[in-house]
Image (tube, rainbow, N blue to C red; front, side, top):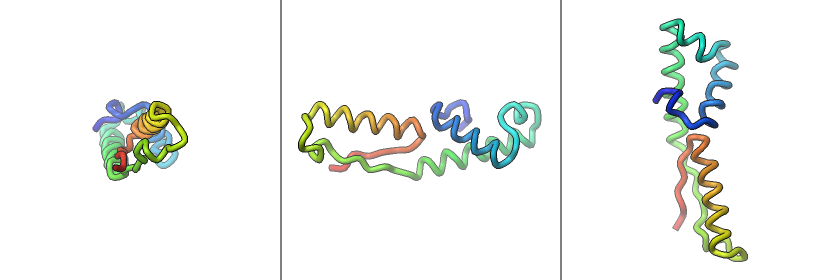
Length: 93
């Protein structure tokens, strides 16, 4: 995966961490083959680590005091935020 394929939130977090660790970012990598390879390998590692994480979300029956619609909206909002960070989720049965 290229950093250009990352969701915006994940890309921003990755680039900030990369710059903090290595002192350069995407602009330097476009002008230097070694830097580009390093950025690509780091992006692959970042994505692989994110794919390994699966956040478990409760089903809507666990939101007893809320309507089914409100519970679904809350769960769906959480799911969107999780995906924006490049993480996976599953809804528990």
